[in-house]
Length: 41
Image (cartoon, rainbow, N blue to C red; front, side, top):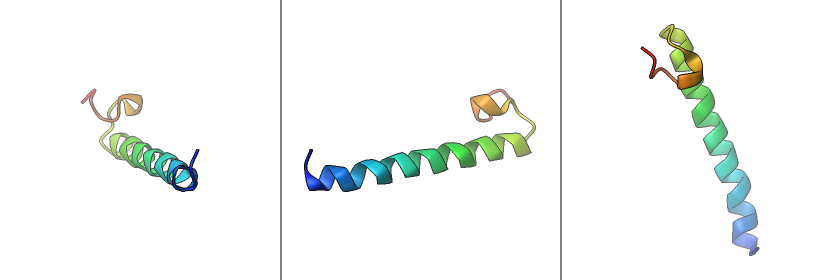
């Protein structure tokens, strides 16, 4: 792995985790089935 990859990998993981958490919270607010991130509405 290059130095750039070592910096990008944790950033990418954090971004994906934050995005999925926000989608999960948004689905909870809409009283949808939260594990499907609001697609169950």
